[in-house]
Image (cartoon, rainbow, N blue to C red):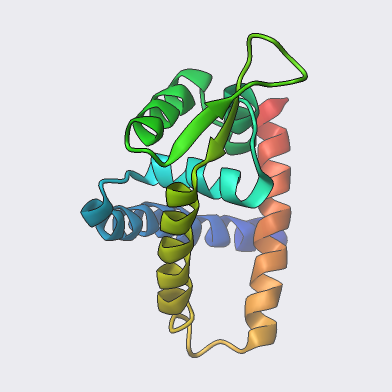
Length: 148
């Protein structure tokens, strides 16, 4: 095994529990609002990228369309998303956040950023920036492997 491969493997060994525990923390923080991690992910994509179809949401989140449709249904039932006519396609509607959904996500994001700003206090801003670059590259390459 190469030294580089071993180091990347160690990074991934940290990422796996990080993702699991992050999901647990996020899920606990969303419980009071009646949101799941999946519903939050859909709101985030819509808030950041604007209206899109369920298939486009599924592609962006690397999840099955059926699961995304369930999240959209739950969000719509609560008044946080709504469907609109899609000028590019008659049968595939666009999903968008409602004003209430956009406000909810903005509040959630502000709380998350506040908590995250206190984490990894022993790391410099440059180290955090480097970690971001490395994890983005690994995510890109692992995703490409998964799709091949």
